[in-house]
Amino acid sequence: MRSLFHKSLIFVIIAGFFSSCSGDKDRNYQYFPDMYRPVPYEPYGAYDIFANQQEAKLPVDGTIPRGWMPYEYEDTPEAREAAKANLKNPIPYTEENLTKGKALYTVYCAVCHGDKGDGQGTLVEREKILGVPSYDDPGRSITEGSVYHTMYYGLNNMGSYAVQTSIEERWQIDHYVMSLKDKLEGNPERSFQTNTITQENSDNLNPAEPAEDFSEEDTQSEE
Image 1 (cartoon, rainbow, N blue to C red):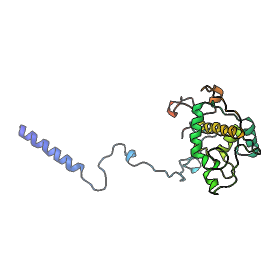
Image 2: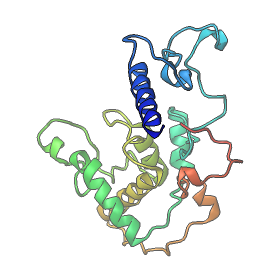
Image 3: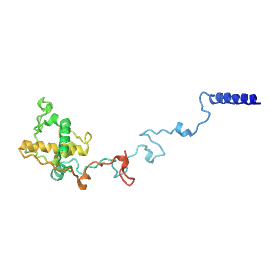
């Protein structure tokens, strides 16, 4: 009796094995077939299931990417003058920020503006770029606001650095540029401040928390 049971069990196992491998084209049975056969939508295709038959959608009006702070000044001559007059550096003038600003300046700016800010960078000396003014040029009268605005949008032959640098990094560069301007003009060295940022100024910088730490009540959109 036990031998017959063993033989029957072996037969069932063999039969199940061949049954599971039968068929060259179709599966015998699929759990959750939608996971194997998803409905593909081309990013820019037209489908009746979507509004306006467009799969790719624009963000909801008024939303901004998480972790990105909008810049209130536009890329116009009028806004440039407004930024020059009104925009102030929100981070404290500390030795740490100045040191980081110098390092970033060396990477992004010195090749044109020169290590001293006198407009005699490597590309200028090699006559690859001409007409780079010194930071103490009285015709420009640069300010913290005008320097930041120029880094954000670019000006003339200088492109924008809004992608390569964060908000805080641009302000650190801003501090170092203004320190070079003071040296060129023979002004006394500026005293360092305590490393504190007011709530009002902190609103002008990138959020300190990682994106996943934001609460559900945050209305910024995710990208």
